[in-house]
Length: 404
Image (cartoon, rainbow, N blue to C red; front, side):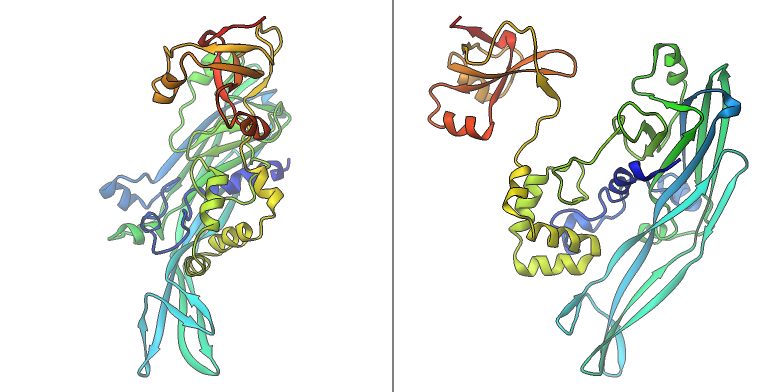
């Protein structure tokens, strides 16, 4: 039972919202940290409402005595990074410090933690607090120091299997933060929290069933699965059921990293081309601050700076939900007139009503509905759009054929 096929997606879940464009500590959007999968100390939960526990339920098919399940709880432990400047024989906290041409900034980093577990009794865990100091010198003279400190995080994982039928079982996994800390602020609470909490599960001798699209015979059991803070989907290759990912937000079954994506940008619903262009347009000083903010931010900036032209070109649009259609009455090369929109509200669609277009492709989505990819005959840039594969898309009832 190997988790490797799902680790890339799990790592993307781990870094979701971790550091957002423009990847600088000074950016407003990066001042409120840790938005996903937070399990806070119970005392903080009681006063501020952020949860201290999460629960996931899913279905397993197979002989109950033959199934073996193994899981990994994954989360980030927050490390607070402070910068101090040596001034007048003493150390004072600083907003930034440059030593030997290297910029140092205060920030909160996240370190990956993993806890293995199997169904059975409770699996407690405790991660001790600690700190480390990096002394900063230039030409032998003390200039300051960087301090990293992390607080104790403790909790428990409980996994149980309940048999529902001859070959159907329900797996329940509960994760709880058991820290006794009584934090006075959210940043302090996050240092005792499980952040970006998610689960990886593997089954041997049985298979996980999709809760999004369960087989008919298991549909009622799927409706009975209660999930709070962790939402399970099938992982690994399509068509397989040996891996499961439970994320703090809803995904689709068999999520995958887009092959065109050069790096994980840590942005929700990433638009890779847009982020590449924007990151590439940061000033050198902004890039320098981003690199000093976090090692992951530094990797993003360095990777974007090193992209080759052909790699940038690959980011320029990809359609995966459509496939060549068969049986449609309209064929590529036919000319059609665009009808007045009845289901569209965009002013541009109303502008094109009555225009003549040439059908470039007839496509079919996953539900079997047909769509036409067209170029406008009167558009001076039609040939350019055709060469780049940039089309307008219409349903069959939104056009009227004007040539056989």
